[in-house]
Image (cartoon, rainbow, N blue to C red):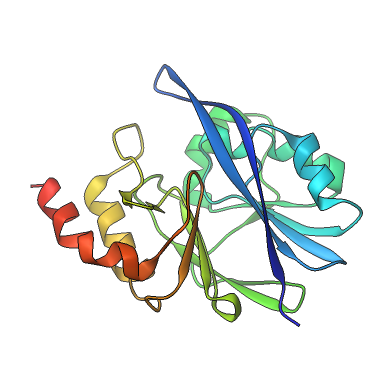
Length: 209
């Protein structure tokens, strides 16, 4: 039996380059009644721990290291006795938030994680952040896109350590290679599908010119 997906929203702030914004973040849980993987750890570790309950947490997987996604990762890791996983290219952002606490493990492109008998494929998708990753779960027909792709377009690239042509390349080569019916479960806001977003790609390219 494949894992199921659970969802909660936490609220707080995002800070970078001297600016602070109020944000609502999606938190995704992937697992079954016995074990679960947490995708991102924003704002409210108690709420996330409550959603986990008494299940074993296999990992806290960070889609990238902007502070709204990882600020509570160490505290949550302590509460649920789980490792924090991050792509090494995002250490520059992680260290802005947690200078004295390293992630527990490294995500790599092509790595396959497993939870509740279900495989989770790590896709390195830089652009929004240098170490941004998306998590593809073919058995469930979903990809967790973090802040790489949203309903309506790519994630923001106007701040430090981001690049618009790079995020376009990541979306085209990694996410739009997935089946069009693939659900895209985002880091903020509503979900979408690969097929709903792909027709807009040329428009996004023109915006960069």
